[in-house]
Amino acid sequence: YKIMKLRIFLICVIFFLSGCGYNSIYSNKNSSSLLISEITATGDKKITRQLLSLLSLKEVGESKNSYVLNIETRKKKKVAAKDKQGNASIYDLSLEIIVSLRQGNNINKKKFVSSFSYNNVQNKFELSRQENTILENLMESMAKKIILFIYS
Image 1 (cartoon, rainbow, N blue to C red):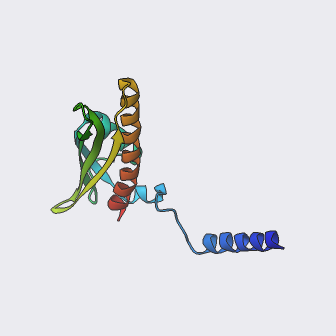
Image 2 (cartoon, one colour):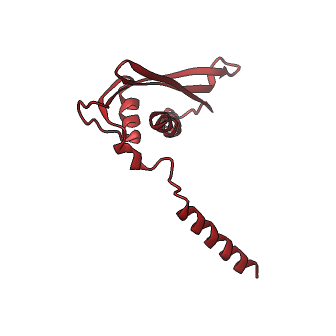
Image 3 (spheres, rainbow, N blue to C red):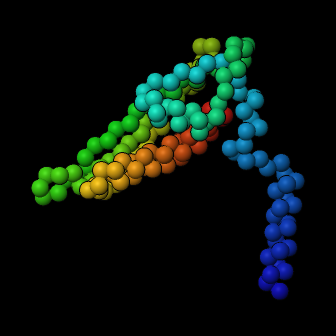
């Protein structure tokens, strides 16, 4: 009886969501409505390249209603805590991205900042892999926020 109720509920939810015009926030249907004539990026080249890949924005050339997108990235790694011997025990990795969207004289600018603290590892190769994973996760979460900013 419970399984039957659950099935009916799920069918109703699917029916109502498909009939109400629901669209995913991150769908690429709106990408054609925003024309970007130029994308400029400054800062850390590796981070910028990965971020642009996550955003999947394309330049369309000069157009009457096109925007100019400027992305500035900064990565900071600092020691948050030290052990008794004075060696770093906890690091703090922060990522700052400044996005400006310009159309004529109208400029929309927003700063996105995210950070993560993690423990030091004796194996420097493992520490580097851990930092890269953390950086990728920070970029993915910030890319979602940037997409919402650009299309709003």
